[in-house]
Picture 1 (cartoon, rainbow, N blue to C red):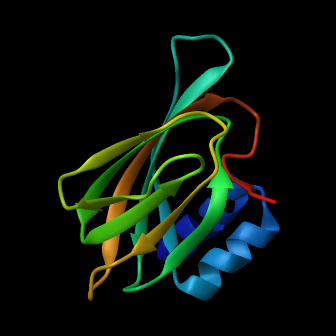
Picture 2: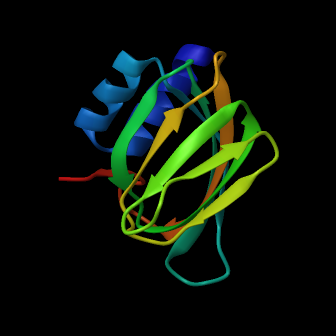
Length: 130
């Protein structure tokens, strides 16, 4: 079943470069929920992201808003145009649509987040920053 989740996550990303980067870094993405949103042309997607200790998710953006809730560990979120913020278990951050951001795990053990997206349908969920 985990393999199926990884294949779905790779398809969901729609960006081979990011999928490769995540596999190399040992990141795993598990889609929890996908549902029509009340705003036409949008959907809500929830994804659990598990990060190995001291890993980094490369700079990227999404075609809509993201709310990231830290389930475990301590992470630094660097949003373009803002000072980085450090979040620990139980903290959350709002990331506006189209804003490039990266995530770095600061904790000794693994870290996890629940990412909730309200995004435009039929677009790749993740776009690598150039």
